[in-house]
Length: 159
Image (cartoon, rainbow, N blue to C red; front, side):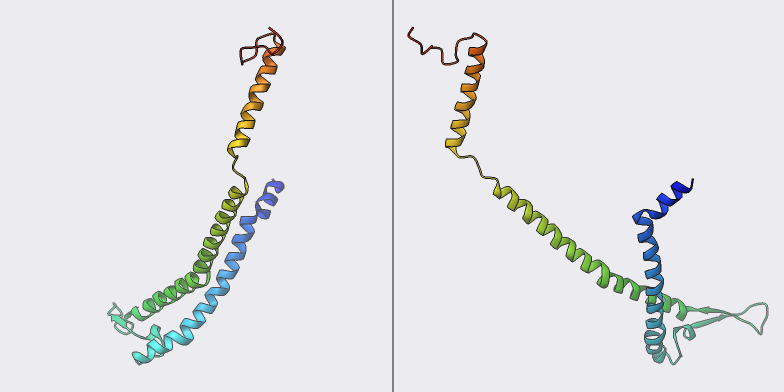
């Protein structure tokens, strides 16, 4: 039971996943700092508010007239902007470069395969003819060993 758990934990994909979670958490704090400290104040200035969390608040009356419910549309817009920032950063920092390097690696691999295919010399007509003669001679030797007449039909020995 412990052996199976050890194999599971030491698998490469589990460790990669753990690293991805840690990097993702750190990345999230950076993005949140950018959104909260740069984008929210800029957008909030357009709407005369400290941040998007304080803009577009819709008050809904409740049974307690002193405490209306608040629908914070600005906070939702802020979350959407945060998501878009993360998506843009992930695309331009990770996906685009990885796709570029993958295309280069595939092109290099294809080029190497083509070069390896070109290194194998094509058999000339003379070599092909010699190979055919060799094969016929080998077949005649096999027939002679079995007591059959050669494939040429004539013996060369004084008949």
